[in-house]
Length: 180
Image (cartoon, rainbow, N blue to C red; front, side, top):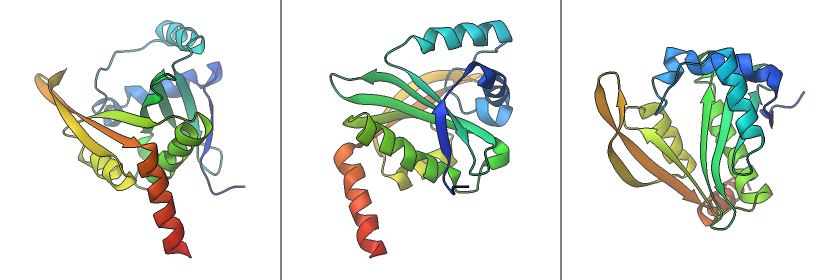
């Protein structure tokens, strides 16, 4: 068994896990726009993105094979070579180092496999844990979308962060030099 997380395209039999994951308060409280889901809406969503050339959803499994999360690659723009990235990890598996490992795999996928130039994301201003991980992984804050999300009775700012391929490659080189 490998020590790395396993990523695979989302399949129909994963939809119940995804629905349950995104319905957890510990997860959906940090999602920008949350919509209640049922099986019919989930199936409709699955069919829609399945035929999209600009969206990929990946199931995340632990090294032991347990379903632990979801990766979102949306708004893939192959002309400008950018993609919006995101991930949700089940609360049971948080604080175990999976976030950083998962983003290293996401970076490898978008910068090496898809040959993209820029990965970006939006994070709610109150998601301090995620912001800390993103900064540690090399994301830079580009700006703030003021009052962009109405959640729990008030408006929240969205922070726009990104990492460029060159920054990702420099971080790999730095880690390689430290290890040698």
